[in-house]
Length: 531
Picture 1 (cartoon, rainbow, N blue to C red):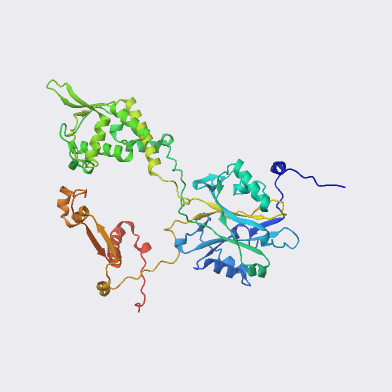
Picture 2 (picture 1 turned 135 degrees about the horizontal axis):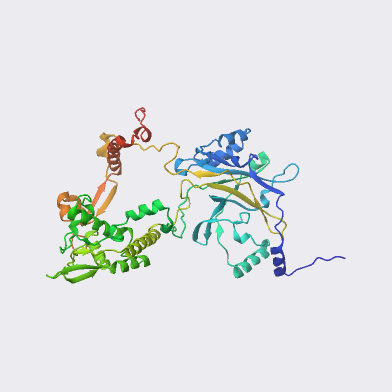
């Protein structure tokens, strides 16, 4: 008499983890009709696009009906191009699951223990998946083992029923859950449709737009390894105050700095004090805006430290000896708040007599540190990349199903074919029908009551009601906490739309003189007068 060997559950899990994956070639997941990767994706323009596609599947000539939905737009390189929902075109995958046996019997939907598809992005010869770790979005990461279950909790053998719940709790206690690849759901077509065709039909919507973005900031450009031509252009862009140079006398020496100097607006080709003041203003603007040199970044602090090694002569006695000086970094920071930010000169800061010579060694260190500031500035300003970022990115879809086995056996993962490569059209590049917005007739203007109200603070109200020339000389003060009168201004949104429409027509005509675009961006055709 032979008795079955009973193993302790822990020993059984350990042995099963070491066993090779079960053969899943007895179940096949492929595009509906078996037409290959190019037949997996279908498109629909109907508002009820799922119903429209499934209705075509139920027709007598369903294969021809689906073929008509596969004649889509392709780029000059032959790559499939999918539109976004804003273009009012939607894209689906159609699949069928059957057993690899004589007669190809369909898989019983009750045997399916989950289904879905993953969107993979091309990265050279590698494939990337959209990876999440709990609530964090890690972004597109290389998938090194593309045949693993995209759900990491399903990669370990887990029994069904109550024993499976115990397995799951044990794994959660002893093994942290690794990041997971995003799974897009698949659905089984209605039973009557599956019965009519004698197939188990699966379908799913391909997501081509998303509000998600990776939580990690976009890595900054490596400014130290740019091609020589680009590196030289970037260095040429940096101010001469950040490079090797001889000593230079400053414009308006010993004069009190005033916000209305506005050096950035001066003509750089004017020469004399105006040209030099403009160059100095560009230097301050680069420090404040582009490099964030007055911020708290490590690169910014080092840049100011290097500038502080230069001592600016602020005054001399009758014998030409320097009697007062100021570190260049401190002066630049104070001057930028006055000349660039337009703040009042409360410290009686004055222009130095000259800017000392910058040696070759110091010039190289200043330039290198400015590039380091750019890297940190890029990290601070550039948010995480959107999920579907880049119009030239290429994607594929790969579906999968999990097929139940016996009660004490794990479900088997079955991967389907990989779809053909596609790209996602940008929002502005759609060929869908235009959205119609009716505009009122001038005789109806008096009927349009204000339907939007703007709460205007006192400073902005005074700005709008004042003389523009006077406002340039004497800007209105901030609201602060004093007494003032705010305003509630109501307008009609249709009137605002008409004003914008008229202004748009004027500027389109003006720009058409340069771009010659009117024939492409504005199409007007006569229609009968609306009743």
